[in-house]
Amino acid sequence: MSTRTFDSPVFVKQSSGLIQEIACLEDALEFLYEWPGERRGPIHATALRACQKAFETDYPLAAARAAFVGFAKSSRILEDITTTMPWSQVNSSTAGSARGA
Image 1 (cartoon, rainbow, N blue to C red):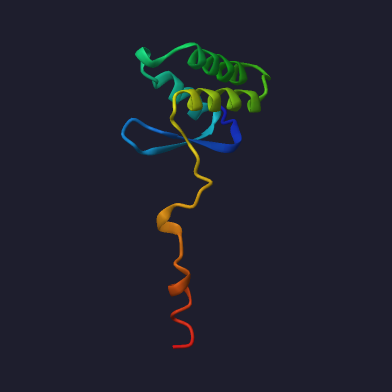
Image 2: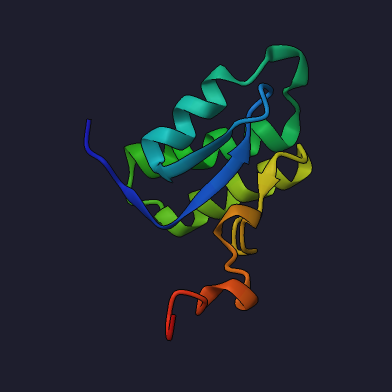
């Protein structure tokens, strides 16, 4: 199996609340195959077909990623990690407190 890496990863929320990184076509296919049958629908089927087509042919990887993102949005599991995580923020009042002491 060849790894076809996305230009940027997609982050999705799992049922356990953990965030999963989908970095390549194989990750997306595995996620879609494991998606519960009772929650599948036409958008899932479209994303799955796009990813399968990209895996088997020269179908654009960007189109497969876009289809996966559309599925994640419609399923309300897409996570936007571009916002700063609370534990990574630096309090400006204490950031320089070690200096000049």
